Length: 199
Image (tube, rainbow, N blue to C red; front, top):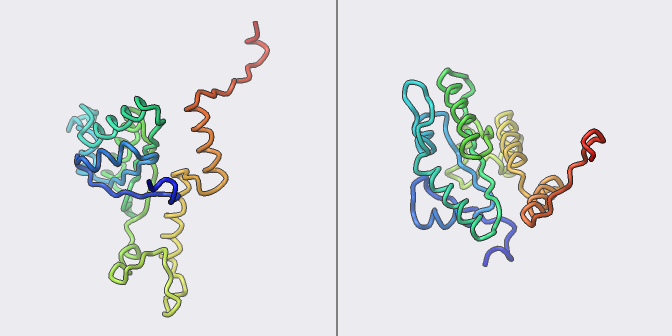
């Protein structure tokens, strides 16, 4: 019902299996999964060998997404674009952060998600929570109307993440959406081959 009245519908579900979460995943076009640089968060995606960090098997959340994708394909409703977003990134690099990043990158090749850097661990994202505002809001009635460097950096991170999602909010996003629709309808573009491959 919401499809004709709204450009986007955002559904925030838990990382555990519930009937509502399964339903939302089943009908989502774009799935954004935030993951902190921690093997605790990684554990919902895959079980790892503790010594080699090799993937043993997909975990419960990855299985939920796999089932949603299977149902979408069976019903001819197209691809689910899955983006795993590294969230609350520290400004100080660590060995653990590097290991988690490498595991997420390698797991993306197995599970079929895109890996993206999200937003950093910034106080500015929590500063106005008690006022019902975010770092994207401005308060012209106060001295804080002048944006700080933290505001600018936070907004830049959010804008970059939105660009990575590839939503149909600009020409590039709409071209990407139309290309996916044509692909799903079976309109495969012919690849122009050099003369050496001609019969």
